[in-house]
Length: 82
Image (cartoon, rainbow, N blue to C red; front, top):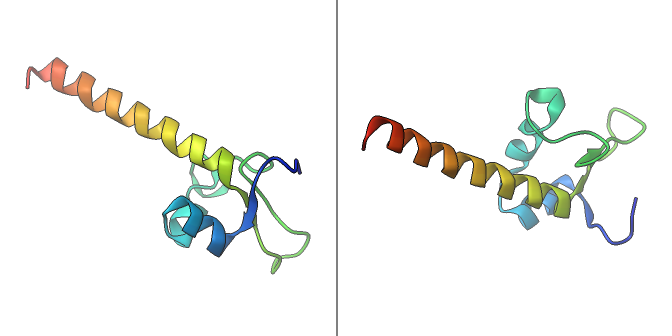
């Protein structure tokens, strides 16, 4: 883990990102989401170990997806003539 990145446990990461803990967990690639293990989060060595989240990297991923969504909505409006 790089010291320049902020890795937090789930409750603190969710708070820092302004989302729920469940939303954060649903965004993992293992649950059909776009957050990639090893880049956006790391699992502990046991089933009950805390997940650590790379808050800075996730914030960038959320921002990128927001931009893509806005561009898609604008393109759809233009295509249907709204």
